[in-house]
Length: 256
Image (cartoon, rainbow, N blue to C red; front, side, top):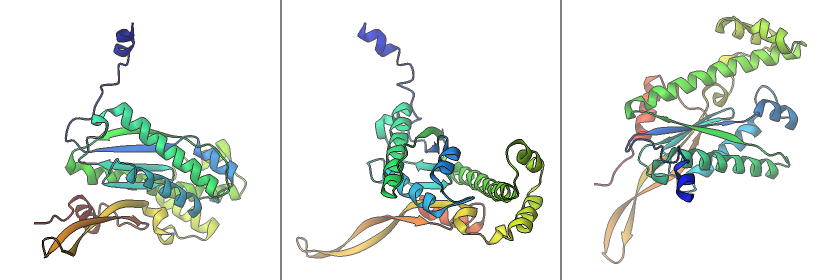
């Protein structure tokens, strides 16, 4: 009977192909209503984003060893290149990372005097190493679309629109029209809002070589160290600067 139940765990052996990079994308569940309930500012609140960044950092410090994480709003895209965590089992990776971030986010809210239970879901997206940049370009473009829409919705809500009427006004509006709407109603030039709103935030390991004296061998030795960096205004990943930025992250220095 036990064997039969084990055999019914039909997804337990679903794995990411060996040596293949993959993203784990986590999304907050029901965060639109949650943010209204908590009272975060609209359309963006840096307090919320700091809590999100702090929560995603948990994954970097709990044995998973991701390469980077790209964050915007309540979404995080966490990249793994060389890892054999949980033997690459999809169920294990998805459930534990979603669990860690959900727990960390809830605890971080408590630290800020807010008591509310939060949850995230997770999915795995395998990618070829040459497609890592293209994936990040895609998500950064999605962030920009969301950013424009968030400001436009906020402008219309301040005028008293909501629900179906608000959606009807925005439906079919081009990017240029949305920019003009926001500038006309809020006096805000979307090209000049904070970088983290326009481009998202990236967490990554920055590697550096440190020289030190080895008293046992009586020689100067080199060691490779790293620190976790928060970049709140990353370059556009589709630009030459963005390409160089990602290459540096994905190809850390080595000690010869």
